[in-house]
Image 1 (cartoon, rainbow, N blue to C red):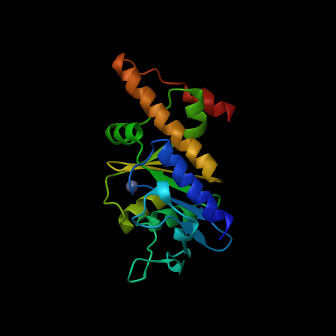
Image 2: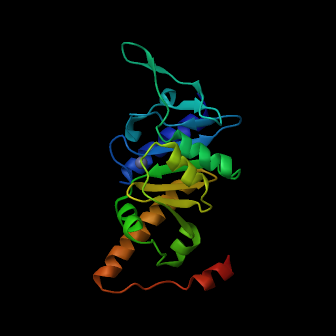
Length: 205
Ligand SMILES: [Zn+2]
Protein backbone atom coordinates (compact mmCIF):
# COMPACT_ATOMS: atom_id res chain seq x y z
CA UNK A 1 0.00 0.00 0.00
CA UNK A 2 1.20 3.53 -0.62
CA UNK A 3 0.67 7.17 0.32
CA UNK A 4 -1.80 7.76 -2.49
CA UNK A 5 -4.20 5.21 -1.00
CA UNK A 6 -3.74 6.56 2.53
CA UNK A 7 -4.43 10.13 1.38
CA UNK A 8 -7.63 9.09 -0.42
CA UNK A 9 -8.91 7.19 2.64
CA UNK A 10 -8.26 10.23 4.87
CA UNK A 11 -9.90 12.58 2.35
CA UNK A 12 -13.00 10.36 2.23
CA UNK A 13 -13.46 10.57 6.00
CA UNK A 14 -12.88 14.31 5.96
CA UNK A 15 -15.42 15.23 3.29
CA UNK A 16 -18.07 13.05 4.96
CA UNK A 17 -17.28 14.68 8.34
CA UNK A 18 -17.65 18.08 6.66
CA UNK A 19 -21.10 17.07 5.38
CA UNK A 20 -20.11 17.52 1.75
CA UNK A 21 -21.26 14.06 0.74
CA UNK A 22 -23.49 11.29 2.10
CA UNK A 23 -23.85 7.49 1.91
CA UNK A 24 -22.03 5.96 -1.07
CA UNK A 25 -22.10 9.10 -3.20
CA UNK A 26 -19.05 11.14 -4.11
CA UNK A 27 -15.66 9.98 -5.35
CA UNK A 28 -11.99 10.84 -5.02
CA UNK A 29 -8.88 10.21 -7.08
CA UNK A 30 -5.16 10.95 -7.26
CA UNK A 31 -2.67 10.92 -10.10
CA UNK A 32 0.03 8.38 -9.23
CA UNK A 33 3.49 8.06 -10.72
CA UNK A 34 2.36 6.08 -13.77
CA UNK A 35 -1.27 5.35 -12.96
CA UNK A 36 -4.31 6.72 -11.14
CA UNK A 37 -5.90 5.79 -7.81
CA UNK A 38 -9.68 6.06 -7.43
CA UNK A 39 -12.30 5.24 -4.82
CA UNK A 40 -14.29 2.01 -5.31
CA UNK A 41 -17.88 1.86 -6.53
CA UNK A 42 -20.54 1.21 -3.90
CA UNK A 43 -18.52 1.88 -0.74
CA UNK A 44 -19.22 4.83 1.58
CA UNK A 45 -16.35 7.34 1.60
CA UNK A 46 -16.55 7.40 5.41
CA UNK A 47 -15.31 3.83 5.82
CA UNK A 48 -12.78 3.12 3.10
CA UNK A 49 -9.60 1.18 3.70
CA UNK A 50 -6.41 1.40 1.66
CA UNK A 51 -6.85 -1.98 -0.05
CA UNK A 52 -10.26 -0.91 -1.38
CA UNK A 53 -8.73 1.87 -3.50
CA UNK A 54 -8.60 0.82 -7.17
CA UNK A 55 -5.63 1.53 -9.44
CA UNK A 56 -6.37 2.25 -13.12
CA UNK A 57 -4.48 3.36 -16.22
CA UNK A 58 -5.23 6.51 -18.24
CA UNK A 59 -7.95 4.67 -20.19
CA UNK A 60 -9.70 3.36 -17.09
CA UNK A 61 -8.39 -0.22 -17.36
CA UNK A 62 -8.07 -1.72 -13.88
CA UNK A 63 -4.44 -2.40 -12.89
CA UNK A 64 -5.23 -3.46 -9.34
CA UNK A 65 -8.40 -4.06 -7.35
CA UNK A 66 -9.03 -6.20 -4.32
CA UNK A 67 -11.58 -9.02 -4.24
CA UNK A 68 -14.65 -8.91 -2.06
CA UNK A 69 -17.60 -11.06 -0.99
CA UNK A 70 -18.14 -14.82 -1.08
CA UNK A 71 -17.63 -14.98 -4.85
CA UNK A 72 -14.41 -12.98 -4.64
CA UNK A 73 -15.63 -10.58 -7.28
CA UNK A 74 -13.23 -7.81 -8.08
CA UNK A 75 -14.06 -4.45 -6.59
CA UNK A 76 -15.01 -1.97 -9.32
CA UNK A 77 -13.63 1.56 -9.62
CA UNK A 78 -16.02 4.48 -9.13
CA UNK A 79 -18.69 4.88 -11.82
CA UNK A 80 -17.25 8.36 -12.44
CA UNK A 81 -13.71 7.11 -13.16
CA UNK A 82 -13.97 8.27 -16.80
CA UNK A 83 -14.93 11.75 -15.57
CA UNK A 84 -11.81 11.87 -13.39
CA UNK A 85 -9.60 10.64 -16.24
CA UNK A 86 -11.10 13.25 -18.59
CA UNK A 87 -9.85 15.95 -16.20
CA UNK A 88 -6.40 14.37 -15.80
CA UNK A 89 -6.02 13.89 -19.54
CA UNK A 90 -7.09 17.48 -20.28
CA UNK A 91 -5.02 19.12 -17.52
CA UNK A 92 -1.46 17.88 -16.85
CA UNK A 93 -1.37 20.04 -13.69
CA UNK A 94 -4.33 18.18 -12.19
CA UNK A 95 -3.02 15.83 -9.50
CA UNK A 96 -6.10 15.37 -7.30
CA UNK A 97 -9.88 15.38 -7.84
CA UNK A 98 -12.82 15.36 -5.46
CA UNK A 99 -16.44 14.98 -6.52
CA UNK A 100 -19.11 15.61 -3.89
CA UNK A 101 -22.75 16.64 -3.53
CA UNK A 102 -22.65 19.72 -1.28
CA UNK A 103 -26.22 20.86 -0.56
CA UNK A 104 -26.15 24.61 -1.27
CA UNK A 105 -23.62 24.57 -4.11
CA UNK A 106 -25.50 21.83 -5.94
CA UNK A 107 -28.88 23.57 -5.68
CA UNK A 108 -27.72 27.12 -6.37
CA UNK A 109 -25.30 26.01 -9.08
CA UNK A 110 -28.14 24.15 -10.79
CA UNK A 111 -30.69 26.97 -10.58
CA UNK A 112 -28.34 29.85 -11.29
CA UNK A 113 -24.61 30.68 -11.03
CA UNK A 114 -22.44 30.61 -7.91
CA UNK A 115 -21.01 34.11 -8.04
CA UNK A 116 -18.28 34.79 -5.45
CA UNK A 117 -19.44 37.03 -2.61
CA UNK A 118 -16.14 37.24 -0.70
CA UNK A 119 -12.54 37.91 -1.72
CA UNK A 120 -11.60 34.43 -0.46
CA UNK A 121 -14.17 32.84 -2.74
CA UNK A 122 -13.05 35.00 -5.66
CA UNK A 123 -9.46 33.89 -5.11
CA UNK A 124 -10.07 30.17 -4.64
CA UNK A 125 -13.18 29.16 -6.58
CA UNK A 126 -13.40 31.63 -9.45
CA UNK A 127 -13.96 30.97 -12.30
CA UNK A 128 -16.52 28.16 -12.20
CA UNK A 129 -17.61 26.07 -15.19
CA UNK A 130 -21.07 24.53 -15.52
CA UNK A 131 -22.00 21.26 -17.16
CA UNK A 132 -25.62 20.73 -18.28
CA UNK A 133 -27.72 17.94 -16.73
CA UNK A 134 -26.31 14.64 -17.98
CA UNK A 135 -26.78 11.15 -16.52
CA UNK A 136 -24.12 10.30 -13.92
CA UNK A 137 -21.47 7.79 -14.91
CA UNK A 138 -21.91 8.26 -18.67
CA UNK A 139 -19.17 8.91 -21.26
CA UNK A 140 -21.18 12.00 -22.27
CA UNK A 141 -20.74 13.49 -18.78
CA UNK A 142 -17.01 12.73 -18.90
CA UNK A 143 -16.80 14.45 -22.34
CA UNK A 144 -18.47 17.59 -21.00
CA UNK A 145 -16.20 17.73 -17.97
CA UNK A 146 -13.10 17.10 -20.10
CA UNK A 147 -13.87 20.24 -22.12
CA UNK A 148 -14.02 22.53 -19.09
CA UNK A 149 -11.16 24.79 -18.03
CA UNK A 150 -12.01 25.81 -14.46
CA UNK A 151 -10.87 23.99 -11.31
CA UNK A 152 -14.43 24.13 -10.00
CA UNK A 153 -17.08 22.45 -12.15
CA UNK A 154 -20.76 22.36 -11.26
CA UNK A 155 -22.59 19.36 -12.68
CA UNK A 156 -26.15 20.68 -12.89
CA UNK A 157 -28.77 18.59 -11.06
CA UNK A 158 -25.93 16.48 -9.64
CA UNK A 159 -23.00 17.97 -7.68
CA UNK A 160 -19.59 19.60 -7.84
CA UNK A 161 -16.15 18.51 -9.10
CA UNK A 162 -12.99 20.28 -7.93
CA UNK A 163 -9.39 19.59 -8.88
CA UNK A 164 -5.98 20.80 -7.82
CA UNK A 165 -2.46 19.74 -6.90
CA UNK A 166 -3.39 18.01 -3.63
CA UNK A 167 -6.48 16.54 -1.98
CA UNK A 168 -6.13 19.10 0.83
CA UNK A 169 -6.43 21.85 -1.79
CA UNK A 170 -9.49 20.12 -3.26
CA UNK A 171 -11.19 19.80 0.14
CA UNK A 172 -10.55 23.48 0.89
CA UNK A 173 -11.86 24.51 -2.54
CA UNK A 174 -15.00 22.38 -2.07
CA UNK A 175 -15.57 23.95 1.36
CA UNK A 176 -15.22 27.47 -0.03
CA UNK A 177 -17.66 26.69 -2.89
CA UNK A 178 -20.22 25.38 -0.41
CA UNK A 179 -19.71 28.25 2.03
CA UNK A 180 -20.08 30.79 -0.77
CA UNK A 181 -23.28 29.13 -2.00
CA UNK A 182 -24.63 29.23 1.56
CA UNK A 183 -23.75 32.93 1.73
CA UNK A 184 -25.70 33.50 -1.50
CA UNK A 185 -28.69 31.77 0.12
CA UNK A 186 -28.46 34.08 3.15
CA UNK A 187 -27.95 37.18 0.97
CA UNK A 188 -31.06 36.32 -1.02
CA UNK A 189 -33.10 36.27 2.20
CA UNK A 190 -32.25 39.97 2.46
CA UNK A 191 -33.30 40.43 -1.15
CA UNK A 192 -29.79 41.51 -2.14
CA UNK A 193 -26.83 40.03 -3.95
CA UNK A 194 -23.68 41.96 -2.99
CA UNK A 195 -21.36 40.94 -5.80
CA UNK A 196 -17.64 41.40 -5.51
CA UNK A 197 -15.85 43.46 -8.20
CA UNK A 198 -14.17 40.55 -10.01
CA UNK A 199 -12.15 42.88 -12.28
CA UNK A 200 -10.29 44.14 -9.20
CA UNK A 201 -9.69 40.61 -7.90
CA UNK A 202 -8.34 39.46 -11.24
CA UNK A 203 -5.89 42.40 -11.26
CA UNK A 204 -4.49 41.17 -7.92
CA UNK A 205 -3.83 37.63 -9.16
ZN1 LIG B 1 -22.10 12.35 -8.00
